[in-house]
Length: 212
Image 1 (spheres, rainbow, N blue to C red):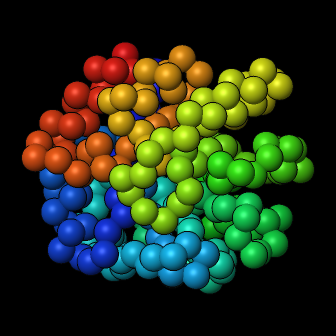
Image 2 (cartoon, rainbow, N blue to C red; image 1 turned 180 degrees about the vertical axis):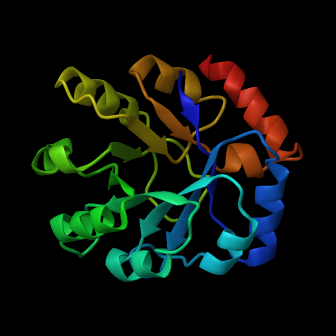
C-alpha cells in the first residue's frame, strides 16, 4: 500500500502547530521541510525543541540546505526523527553526510531534483534506505507537478532498484492517479493537505481513497 507522509513547510511556529494538530491521528509520520534560504530561495521555520515537545508521530527531515551535517546536529536528540532526506545537489560530500546520518542511526533518503539524472544514485544505493524524486523544483509549495516525474519512477523501477520511491512536490488529487500507476511507494502532499478549507485530517482521508 502507498504511504502518505504530509509535507510541512511553514514560516513560523504558529503555522506549524496549526498544521500538525489539524492532522489528528490521520498519519504515522510527517515530513518537516527545512530550507536555509541559500540552497533554495526561501527559509522555513524548524525548531527541534518544539517538535520534541509536541509531535507524537515519527518525523523525517527534508534538508533543503547547503550544510546538511550542521543541520542534522541540531536534531540528534529529537527522538521523533527517524529519517533524514538529503539532496545530492547540495554542496556537501554526500558519502560523508550519509556516514554521519548512519552514526545517528537514522534512515537515509537521497533526494533528486527534476533535472538531476538518476544515474547519480548508483554510487549510493547500498548505503541509503529510500529515493525521493522532487515533482517540482524545491522551496515553495503549490507549484505545478512536473509529469516526467512519473517516467523517472517507472524507469528507476525498471532498472531493478528495489528501494522505496517517494515523491514530494505537486502531489494532489489530480496527480496521484498517475503516480500510483508509476509504482510510487510514498507520496508527500503539502498544499493538498494544508492549503484549503478542509481540515488536514479530512484531506488525508480523501487522498487515502486514491491510493487504496
